[in-house]
Image (cartoon, rainbow, N blue to C red; front, side, top):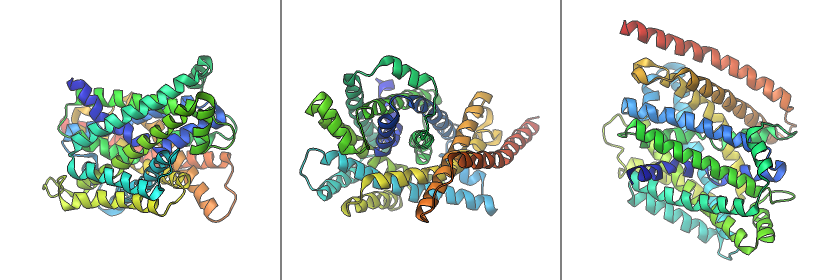
Length: 436
C-alpha cells in the first residue's frame, strides 16, 4: 500500500506533461504519420525519466530543491543573470503559457457534445483548480492528480485497444526509428512536450524528505505509465483523416467505434487539461519557493507569497479561457517557449549533478551523462528550430530549411557543450583534490 501511494504521489509528473499539448502533438503525429513516430515517444519517455531522476536526486542528497541549489551554485555576474532569466522564465512565462493551453484544452474537451458556455466551463475548471490548491497540501494535491491520471490513462488506453491497431506496425514504429519527410518538427514536439522545464523543479520540490529508493520506484513507474498513455494517444490519432482538430478526432472515433468513443475522448481531454491546469500553478509556486526562500519558512504552502504565485499563473489561464482564444495556437506557443527555456535548465542540471561538492558520491555516472548529453543536444535543437520558426512567422518570412536549422543546432550544441564539459571536469578534479 505504501508503494502504491508512492506511485500515486509521483503520478503528478505524468499529470503535468500529459496535457492538451501532448494530446495535440501525439494525436497529430498519429494523424499524419500513423505509428511511424512511436519511437520518438519512447525516447522522450526515457529522457524525461533521466532528467527527472537527476533533479529529484539533487533534492534528496542536498535537502534543498533544484531551484535553490542552482541559485547557490551559480550566482553573480553574467552566469547569475542567465540563471535568474532561465528560472524566472520557467516560473512566470513558461507556466503561465502552459496554463493558458491547459485551461483552453480542458474546456475544449468539456465542450464536446455539450451546450455549456465555454466561459462557464472556464470558471468551473479554474474554480476546481483553485480550491484544490488553496485547501490541499502538496501530498493531497499530488494524489488527487494521480487519480485524474488514472482516469485519463484508462480512457486513452481503452480507446486505443478498441481501435485494434496492427501490432506489427506498432512494434515497427516503436523500435525502428524513421524520419518521414516533414516529420522532424513533430519529433521535436513529441520530445519537447514530454520533457518539460517546470516539471524538473516540481519533481525536485516534492522529493524533499523522501528516500532515494522510493523516489526512483515511484518516479519510474509514473513516467513510464505516462509514456504509455502518450503512445495510446498517438494510436487514437491514427483514426483521423484530413486536418487534425479536437472535434475531428472526436467525430472520427464516434464514426468508427460509436458515440461512446467520442465521449470517452472528451473525458480524456478534459482530465488531461484539468490535471495539467493544477500542476502548472503548483510547479510555479514550488519553484518560486526554492528560488527565493532560504529555509526561512516564509514561503510555506499557506503563505501569501506562495499563494500569490499560483494564483497569478492560474489567473492567466482563466483569463485566456474567458476571452475565448483558440486553444491550439496557445498550445503551440507554450511548446515553443518550452524549447527556449529547457536547454538552459537542462545544462544547469548537468553541471549540478556532476559536482561532487554538491552531490558527494551521488554524482552522475557515465551512462547517465551520455543520455543527459543527448537530451541537452536535442533540447537545443528544439529551441533553435522553434525560435527561428516563430520569429519567421512573426515577420512574415519563410522559415529556413530543416537542413539549415539542424546545422545551426549542431553548431550551437558544440559551442555550449565545450564549456559545460570543461566545468564538469574542473569540478570533479577540484573535488577529488580536496578529498585527497
